[in-house]
Length: 344
Image 1: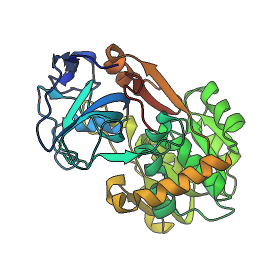
Image 2: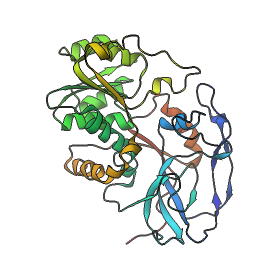
Image 3: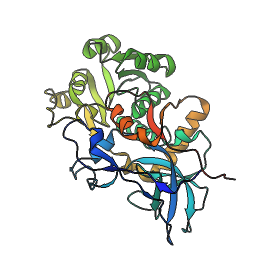
Image 4: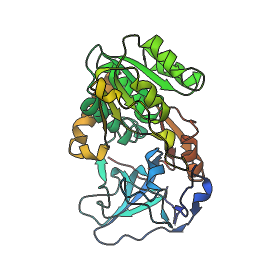
């Protein structure tokens, strides 16, 4: 079903510390008209990711700051409802930066080109395990961390979108995998549903003491999603020639001032640890390769996809904030609509 109004959430102020709903404001407009060389996409699902908090700042070292008064950008899945572009036709499913809005008017390129896809799995899978978070986990593990069979892997933020896929990849590669997450429910999901070898509830347990119990031989690979004090705890337990893939530092994203780093970075030298940060767009030429492998693992059941789907346009800002309260398990997203056009 299509509508004549384009509902939009605009970024109207930059957070000072924790982001708030007051940073956003509704700014509806008529459904955009389509000129030659452009297409109109109806947004079906919007991705909710920690990285979006960084996009709201004025730090150009990460991405160009979002101009105030513009639509809040977000990855999403949609369907082309009108096209005057040779490469896209009505009914095509696409993924890309659609933003917090019902309709995205685009030339198909923008800051990030739209990607067409033919759904084989459920649509939300293409925003999670087969989307940016799954790709981040894939390249972070396969290209940065490079775990070997029999090694011990620790993943922080392990019940989140990227962490849960990274942890499962560790198991697929025949490693012993320990996840760190917040809450007994999430830890139970990691061990009972995803098959991890152990889980640590950082909200209720001493992370260092539990690591000593679960990893008596030390840690070979650490997939870091949180930074902060947890990174320091892991540095003390890394084996020689260990690898740390720095994917995110969510513990400091909403801090009002820069947070102090670990005091034990000398471990990197004495234990010959390689610690490397990465951004998934660096691997864009290999996305198809990664999606093929992730899809194959999904098809065999070696990899499980889990989406935490909220409903409705009005819920978008609150869902985004819930991400930083630890309110989700797996990939967090918002559903706006069902596919408006039949295909095939």
